[in-house]
Length: 172
Image (cartoon, rainbow, N blue to C red):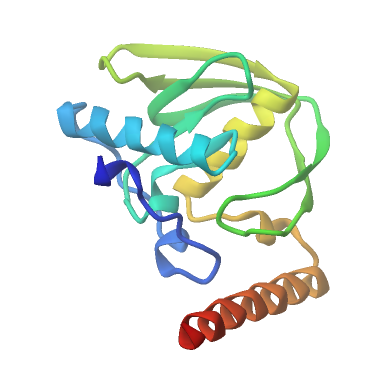
């Protein structure tokens, strides 16, 4: 099961800034990747994960806010309504929280792992997580919603954390 232990890419990795490619066909490989994504999300205590966060440029997301796992391929937001502002974290921006303004409700169309069309109407946290993960498919991160100063602090904090990890590896 080595394939399920995919490493989450962090802020600064160029793959996180690329627009993900649409999935042409749902195959066994697609289903395996969706399963690996879900396992990586759960292992890292996340509630959503997009394929680019694992270095895969494909339009796929997994989401579970506690009411069941959603595996979505080529998700598109077709309607937004209302407003909310929630402090968001991100597995690709560890340790950072950014208050992000998003729609309170969204309607999303996608294909599931069985290649069937699904339509979701999401509210509140579920809507927030769907928008957050779909942002990843467009190369957008929570830091893009932060002020210039907050973004600089986040960058500095992550650089210090990476440096500490590098120093620890050198000592081993």
